[in-house]
Image: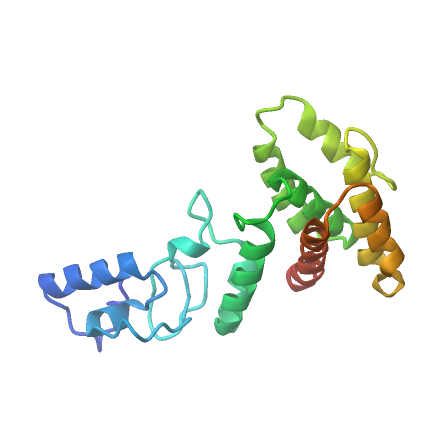
Length: 219
């Protein structure tokens, strides 16, 4: 797990291992070899996560908690980035900002609903399934609601139980996904007309735009 399978690597002493593990705990982006050498300042994005998930670059690396899911899995979209690990940094930053940032004001389940809708429009089965599961998890305290919401996302024009405001947001998302060049100031005005604030409109826009990128990366 620490990349010590390379015959050229000398077996470190117990104190060295303990020190390296302490550094890796504090800084999971740090490659194990760097931790053993005490080069904590070199935060290379050489993420090959867990054995078998990514291709190796100069040895094996343990899975950083920041890229693994609840079950310890590494999502397919992240595995793709193993070919050019430096591209993962920007991807993760955008993903977390649009879907998981605490300063977002829209409910998480609705952001996931937008993710599902855009993924369905882009024929990305993997993303639609993955984020539908997240949506279901967030709605688990409201029995029956997930099935009703999810069914509407398959419709040409999603309706109830989505509210009038939410339906308007999904209509905007559809236009932004299918014909981005057709979207203009009048579409933003329509969202304002049903009560969305400008910051919330940006959140809707950013989730739709992010999944235009993610769907095309995955598929």
